[in-house]
Length: 351
Image (tube, rainbow, N blue to C red; front, side, top):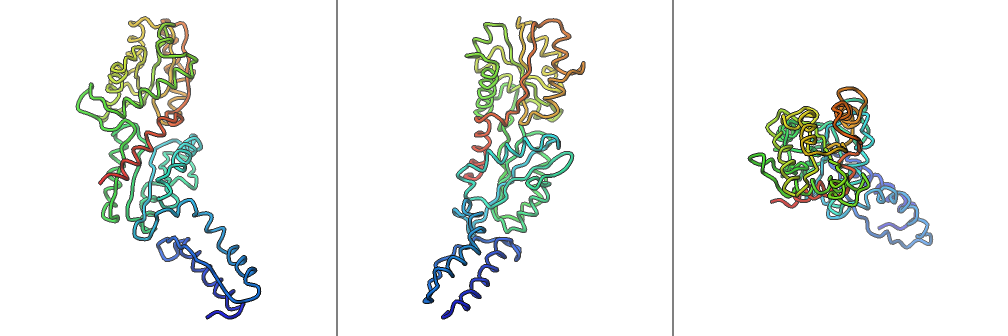
């Protein structure tokens, strides 16, 4: 039984050191510890209690938002994966952190759940290689892992991701990989789904608003067409771009077109899209990226001044009265952010 302030001080220091050790994972596994009262009989008990609170208060505050339902028996982690160039790390970091940190389910996820695989350049503290993120999760004693790709579709990078995660599958009790933005690919060019519809509606509404029109029909009446430029791929998932065009048509968006930098599928190549707009009689064009982050492709391949940029090719065609660009990634649109969050939540809820 503690009878003196000195004995209580020593006990406090011992408890504080133990608590910090658990938070820092010195034993190889982090834990959340909730402390009760420190009642004592000394005349300066208030002073001693305040000292105790100052010792552990700051550490406790850091974890206050994630205490929730975490226990050592039900540890979870979300890894958010993307591929990007170093010059756009800041924008990407703001997107991931901003979108996920405010979500209720994140209160039940272990601290430090965001990780991104960069293609080039320096790595910020929240950005780690996928293997590093997976190893960290293992070292932290994570049992239930959720991986959220920020890819547009089930393409080559998604395949690489699933292969990497598969190598760690036996190290967790459960591993779930959430859907990319456009959801399942589908069997043919006409296959559409709720995710594609949600994306089509969200990006079109944002483009129309940014252009200053009251509606898509109002833009059409003025002879304006919107072109969303994606990356393109030789992967079988390239059919997703054709499906997005089919989705636009199904929604009645006659003046919205899908293109790709790589020209795969072929009917999404710049020259093919120019011919479509020319045949339809549109005289004004607004180009916008079909990419999560408006990076090098948006700034240079789409809106750059080089002869081979989409803007330059549209101008060189001599067909159109005006060509404008909107440089903004899909990740800036609230409805798109919420779709990623919904995919993460669905993966968490899946049996």
